Image (tube, rainbow, N blue to C red; front, side, top):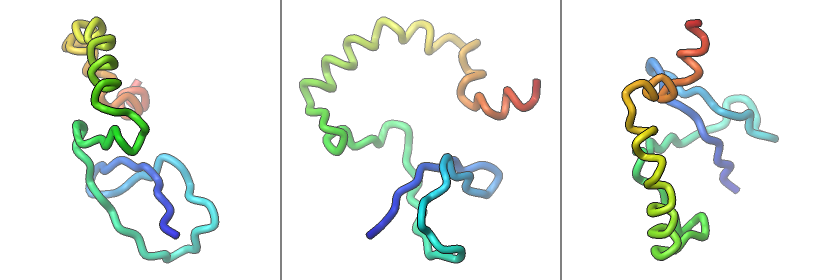
Length: 83
């Protein structure tokens, strides 16, 4: 059975966000790159109407999220390591 683990691609390497359980060293892996907007909401139990409501509710935060000063959180771990 496949095991899925999230990770981040940086400097030509994949950094896993968690250690997979019971996976032997040298196991074969397949890496799939996701774009930020390529999230399958249906697999998360969210239908189109729920997505519309969520989008509308979160729109009130967009001004803050779109603020250029918030870009520090785009790569928070790296920014934190540099300070």
